[in-house]
Image (cartoon, rainbow, N blue to C red):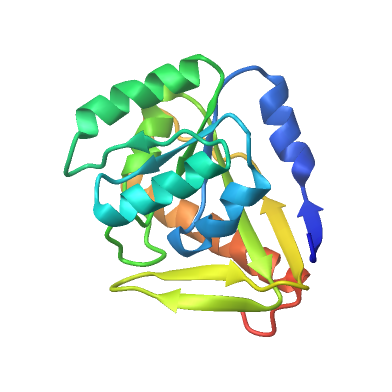
Length: 196
């Protein structure tokens, strides 16, 4: 409430929502904290691991009216996959951190690409930038939390498609570039002096 929020390319989100079909948000792990606030009460279901850290994140999501899908490639992956397909079929959205839950930081793992390929639904890359921020370092990751009295940007990138015949290694490199570019744009608009 103390900060100026700048929305960029919000029409991309609105166009996807207007189709009535589910789609997939993708964002780097360290930028997810404030996304939950900016999308509070929306029909987004973030994929969150079954870990203790994941439980904390799931509680934060619930506080903002978001219902998480719990699972990962290493635990309850098949169950989560079925749940995610059902969510997309109802017209709701999924939220993926392609570099989570164990990293490496800002490296795309195949889960989000596989989901997009199997479902035929687009990925919408997003990022939050904040001029003034706290950065909390973890074992492999970092979390960016905007400070009060700030300039914060919310940027949506163009929809990213994964066709049935696409090579996922090639698409991972492409998606990494897209996510990096959206994050740099968010930082630039917010007024961050040096992009991450």
